[in-house]
Length: 414
Image 1 (cartoon, rainbow, N blue to C red):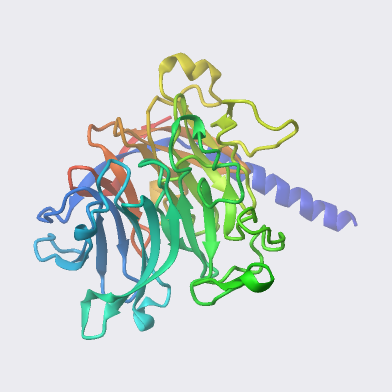
Image 2: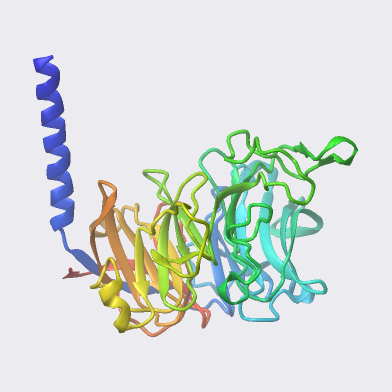
C-alpha cells in the first residue's frame, strides 16, 4: 500500500509539474504564408486533403465549385472536380456549398460527401457522391445519393461542417435555421436536426418508425448515439442522429489528432462568441444561453455545458467575461489544435479566429482548463475557415480567395 501511495504521489507531482510548465509558457505569435498563389477561386470556405496518397487538396467555393490542387504547387493547374453552381446554392451570405468530407476509404471506394443549400423550397442537402470511374480528378455527377434533406425556415445559420470521426462515423454540424433569438426554437428541440451536431453511419442503413409507417433510412444510426433508445412518436420523435445540441451556428468543428477531443466554434448573436468542447449528449445552452450567459428564460433546473472559451462583441462586456484579456470580435471561426511537426512552438495550441475582424487567437487547454490564451495575429482579411493537411499542418482561408499556411513568427505573447 505504501509503495502504491508513493507511485501515485510521484505521478501526481509529475502531472501538476507538467501542467505548470505548460501554463507558464507564453503563446508564440504566428504569421501567414501564402500557398497556391496562382489559384483562381473565389468565396473559399473549405479545404481538405484527399486521403489517398495523391497529395491533392479539394478546395471548396461557396458558389458551388470544387477544384483539386496538388500540394506544393502554385495552384495555376487546378482541375475542376465538381461544379453545382447551376443549382444556385449561394443566393445569400450564409447559404452555399458549405462543406466537403472524403470517406475514410476514399482511396478504394471513391466516396465523398457534400453539404449545400437548395431553393424553392429552401433546404440544406447532405449527399454522397462518387469519383468518376474513368477520371480520378472528376466527380461523377450521376452518383449523388441524398442522405438528409433539411427544411430551412430562413437563409441564415446553416452550419455545414462535415468530418469523419476516428470510429468511421460522419459528423455533421447544422445551425438553428435562423431568426433572431432562435425564433423557431430549434436548438433545444430534439425532434429537429437543426441547432445540432449529428452523427451517422454512411456505410449501413437503419429502419425507424412505427408499425406500418416504418422506413429505411439512407444511412445507419450508430448504436451508441445518445438518443438511440428514445421511442418513436411520428413527427415528434427524438432525432436519433443527434450527438450534441443547443448550438446556434456551429460553422466549423475539428478533432484533436492526439486526444480525439472535438472542438467547435459556435457563432453568437448579440454579445458572445464561443468555443465548445463537444461531448456525447452535450447541451450547450442556445437559445437559453449565449456563451456562458443567460439569454432568455428556459426550463427550471435545466443544465448546460459552459464554453471552454468565449469572447464578447464589445469592450464593455469584458468585465463579465471569464477571459477578460481576450480581445473582441463578432463571428467566431473554429479552428484546430496544432499537432504538426513543422511548428513545434505551436504544438498543443488550439488556433481559432474571427471572420469579421480577422484576428487569430490561441489557447492551451490542460488539466480540464485553459492555462494560457492570447492574440496570435492581428490582420485585416476576413477568415472563412481553417484547414488541416494529413501531416497536421494548419492553413487559413480568406474571403478574397487566398489560402495561407500558419507558421510561428518567433515572437512570444502572453
